[in-house]
Length: 229
Image (tube, rainbow, N blue to C red; front, side, top):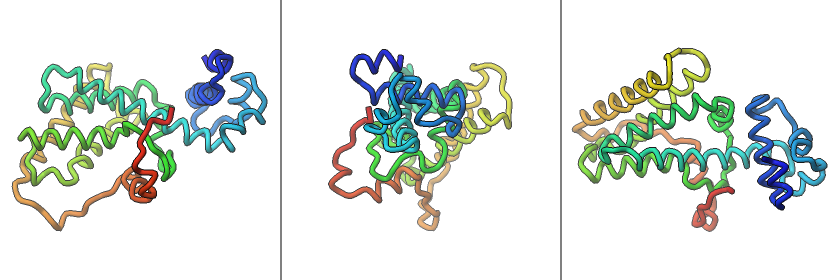
């Protein structure tokens, strides 16, 4: 795949493909830019024209994977038979299943500092989740007073399950069992949020690494949000 892409004139894309394969084989840190170059069949100096270091290649790959995951979550929600809360349940299933099926790549984007402040990942999974929670609030499926910070409640549930599974700290037999547990967690999170009938201004509001990066990004660059590939 990587060499084929390179011979079609897309060396940057071929290096990203090679890096993703190396991540699956050796983990995030167990390979070099020289190895990625060799997979594509070019010299390291040719690779440096696109990526100044291995870390730069890793950051670029993280952006590609995050955008791909964002699209995957959107597609899962759009395919849900019930376009109410079932969309969010489908999002949770898709997130956890993706991590379990591709754990090395999931770890790549789960670690802190996976992308740079100027990154313009679109659609970012965090944005997909917040947009869906906004939609649920507008549809009356989530109390308005529970909306602030609801993404952290839902994300903590599904991300926590994903990490516990790929790190081998818990075991669930079969994909169906994993999806059912993801469904249960999303429903539990929604049910808990539905009980929040009184606003709590004293509740601390977490910030994700993604929202912090958005805050750090210059206003001019934040106007353009495109996928990295």
